[in-house]
Amino acid sequence: MTKIRLLDPRLANQIAAGEVVERPASVVKELLENSLDAGARRIELDIEEGGVKLIRVRDDGFGIAEDDLPLALSRHATSKISALEDLESVASLGFRGEALASISSVSRLCLSTAQEGSVSGWSARSEGRDMETVLAPVGHPRGTTVEVRDLFFNTPARRKFLRTEKTEFNHLEEVVKRQALSRYDVGFSLRHNGRAVHSLKPADNQLEQERRLAAVCGPAFMEQALYIDREAVGLRLWGWVALPSFSRSQADLQHFYVNGRYVRDRLVVHAVRQAYRDVLFHGRHPAFVLYLELAPAAVDVNVHPTKHEVRFRDGRTVHDFIFRTLHKVLADVRPDTVPQQAAIAADGGESLMAMPETQAAMPLGEAGSASLATPSAGAFNAAPTSFQPQYSSSYTPPSNAGVADQRANYQRLQTGPNSVAPADDSTAPPLGYALAQLKGIYILAENQQGMVLVDMHAAHERITYERMKNAREGEGIRSQPLLVPMNLAVSEREADCAEQHAGVFAELGMRIERAAAESIIVRELPTILADTSVEQLVRDVLSDLLEFGSTDRIQAHINEILSTMACHGSVRANRRLTLPEMNGLLRDMEATERSGQCNHGRPTWVQVSLAELDKWFLRGR
Image 1: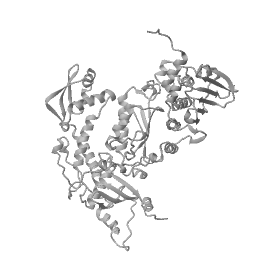
Image 2: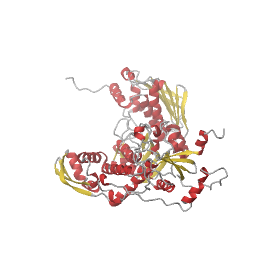
Image 3: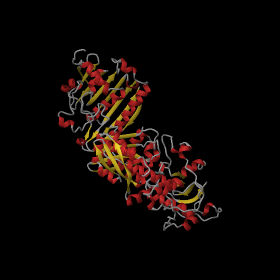
Image 4: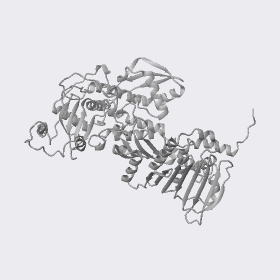
């Protein structure tokens, strides 16, 4: 066996570069973070050949002092932390002191800088072969310019793994977009091969921020985004979340920042997915740009060299705060709060309307004449097979527009040209008033903006589902003891977790006791989950508790059963409804949480504006 020896500094830097510098986009990320930490208000990027030939980043920050310049390209040299206490409360984007040394070890690097009031600027050059830094005076305004040429020129094996120029530039551009969304007060410009790609001015108010957001994420996202700003328990969450109708086929429009740092964190993703679960079509992904602010000491950013991962001191509190905030925001979305531009789903041209019929079609029920209502609360804790929906009229006409008035207002559709003009509909409800039923499936209504189409089964399914959930929450979760208690073999860590969270299980209607070091006993289950796979459910709940500190898996199972019951208990296609029944359904939709989507995530209604109708018939041309 060979002797143990110290690595050559050049080799050590190239090994470190393998962690920090993966491709040109990695270089740009590190340089942009340095510029932002230096107080820059304007950052300019010039890229050639996807960043392989040249990456030039220029900022107007504080600059680097002449005495500090030789150390700037040294490994583990930084001005951002100086003691262990600083590492436990990092307030800057960079802090490791590895970026410039790693970049210079695999490229030809030139750093030019000047401070405010200095007679002249200075430049430092370093190449990967010998890593020696050469200083020279240079004319330069306040700030810093870093030029990185011939990336991976001395590591051809790494260069072979680079993709095409277009692919590498796309990755690089994505990094610039993420940084532009992290600091609205900083202007960014990006040029590729001499061509201007982005020119983003500083945004000092919400309107300008939304303009930048539209430029980066697309106007379709901005048209269907809701702004949120919530504070609690020392945490602040603000930003924009897209309506469920703007779901994506990929998780490519999800930006989450912790104290200005872009992160990809499993805890955050889980909390967001949990908030969207009741309103998102299966296989789809939500879109959002969110910012979490908390004390630097409450989050550990020293987890991974790329700094994309973080660890929260109190992950459970953060998870619950994110989930509850987004859950409430999405629950409060009603027809009167939905932006008019968001009437039809969009995904860069991709819409839920284009989904296969096997996914979007709902079963057809037999024709009937029953009116709309909610099932009795006594069925919530019973087995699903015992559920028998009972209907009774739930429609109460508005005081300012009764059914007779509605009929009179819309008689013009059946009368001749001499009919009286309709009354002003400026006070009409968000979903307007029903006109007719189309093919026994859709309700056609008119509101102030134009025409509304409602899928009556999907809409009534959501209404029934939400009422069942509310009634069940009022009753609480009923439990029943198992005739034969179930003994489960688990790991010691899982058994400890079950014992520690016995109170959590009790709140969820389950009684679990520890039988041995690696064994637990399940004695009670919620009545509604009597036919569920107990072993798999308990293991999934323990997994959630171990990873996230909380769980909603039992609640999710109960909601799935309620969703199935609501689906079977809602009005079906080919059911002829009267005008009062149709208007009653519209009014219930306006008062129901998450009424824009059914339990399966399908849209329940779409708005067609008068301008769109005029365009269809070439009116005004």
